[in-house]
Length: 96
Image (cartoon, rainbow, N blue to C red):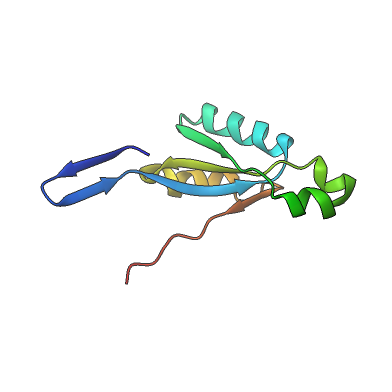
């Protein structure tokens, strides 16, 4: 993750935007982001041993990934992908 540091303040511009569960949804998401000039990074998650062991054949086909985007693009990206299948938007962290 890229961050800028000025004195004691650190600015992280990249946020976890959503989680996806299929290759089809990944391709659709990439197409939408490229058409709308939204930069992104896909982070793949490894499935646990127990998930692979007890998940069954249907679960073996599924992939799981997290998409990270610039925080300035979150609002626009949310509007573009809110109706996509196999995509779960991450809830923003609330400031305490």
